[in-house]
Image (cartoon, rainbow, N blue to C red):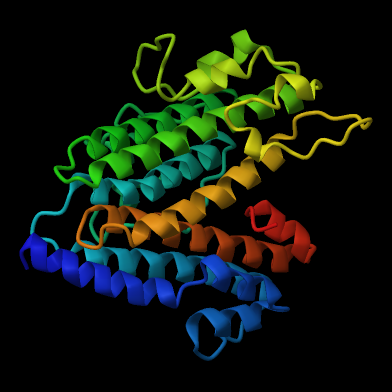
Length: 336
């Protein structure tokens, strides 16, 4: 199928899939279920397996994830020559696999985990478990060639995250279509705000100084510059007084701040900022999904919408397993 015909098919199919997805207004029905069995029936419309509930919640997470991968790959296969970003978006899950493998092995646990399989035949050799070097050999993160210590993991995982960000950023600039500017804008906003929230969390929850935080940010370029597209807004919040609303009320992202009441003690709430931004961001993606029906923007938005749905499903399943409060679970995924 040529790319023109493929784009028309993909948009029609993606619309049908998202209409049945638990995104947007439909998401709230996920959070009304009372048991793992009810969640399983809602998601898959088939007989519930006769297994303990704690095992069932894990099955739900795995089955939902694989369903997402299958749906996305079918759309991807429609293109005779798909945009590189379409494939690289899925690498997020391979990279998460490597981080999970690294975490297990760092603690001496050699029990083989149940990993996500985003590609039918991807570059990672999971069959070489537990040889990390063999698993990552000839991949974009072949530098991950040993078992790192627990103390090293945070920096190593951060390096993987930053590599993924830069790969997608480079891919977005390869898109030869007018929608490229929207894809670039989406990725820029996501990276900027993740940096901002990360910086705020480190300041508020860990009392870290700006000089300690800056090296942990994701930068557009390997060698940071003063006005780095991804990090400059995060760097700008490092010197603001966390307890002075007057310093924040004219902030670029003031719409995402927790409310201020005259006469009350106030301080920046990173979790509130993140939730407010995430709600706004997902609404933007929903709008952009329909903006250019025959463009690469459709696949990017579809991936983000379905990935967000998967986050909801995982949160609900985890909440049921832990018997967590529904409002807390919804809050954790920015739905309240």
